[in-house]
Amino acid sequence: MSVGLRLVPPPIQLSDAPAPSFAHIARMSDDTGLLEHSRNAIVRREHGYCVDDVARGLLVASREPRPTPQIVALAERYLAFLTHAQGPDGAFRNRMSFDRRWTDEPGLGDWWGRALWGLGTAAARSSVPWIRREARLAFRLGTRQRSPWPRAMAYAGLGAAEVLRCDPHCPDAAALLRDAAEAVGLPGPDPAWVWPEPELTYANPTVAEVVIAAGDLLGDEPRLLAGLRMLAWLCREQDNDGHLSTVPVGGWRPGVPKHRFDQQPIEAAAVADACATAASITGDDRWDAPLFRAIAWFLGDNDTQTVMYDPLTGGCYDGLTADGPNVNQGAESTLALVSTLQHARTLAASRATRPSGGLA
Image (tube, rainbow, N blue to C red; front, side, top):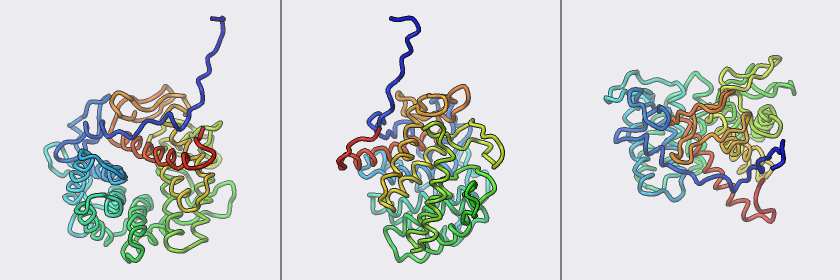
């Protein structure tokens, strides 16, 4: 071999994405729900369960078009956990210890919104009739509430959007989606900062996605265009030399140099969700490129050129640091991987029907 020869890895292709695997999700689940944390791939029972992750579990299980018996059983378990967490007024507890004791009272934080997102998705998409019916009942109860926090409203609004896509005349879902979009707000006139908030924090693509969904489903074209503008700007902001570099823990602010770490898998998954929604609504295949960058982030096209999942376990690493991945494989991160690989599967099928074929 010649001295100094540098081998350049081939570019990542859509075909490099593995099929979604529920193996690690099943490993972290028991007869109660989905445990939150792991050390490496070993579950940490002492940290217990949270509605945040169980709701995400129900969401990704419900997105499976042909679920296996194992996935259906997980969805049933997660739905039972959420209905147990819900109070009579529609609010939700969030945290349960491993000995099955709730450690908090019902509230309206992000977990309320994520619960409604999961329930709305199950009500709309589950292939199992009794899951759809039970999820719809719990979703309807949850719509009695409104959270004072815009992120919680955005998550809930996405659940409402799922319900409206299968039942366009549902007044509870329409009202919740409208209120969610209004809670998020619209971008200001400054072209250098196309965002309704003074800084980028977390779940930013979700904020844009709920505005897009509301504009589409409620027949508000100016709001739809505003949401698409927000998402396009955010995708440009998160582009670093052609690959996705998500807003990290700590956020970004105008006039302050961007720091790159720690990046969370859930942020890349939110990009995939929002771009898939934008593509579906507009029919514009230009959204395929940022969607693919979100997929490629997990496959190693990121700021440290590190693959972000363990092919032996099916688990996703918990964060991207300047020194590479945090190799713990928690529920949130693994669900983010599964969700994004579901989009990869859909995108691959869509591209296969087009004359241009695959996506590099």
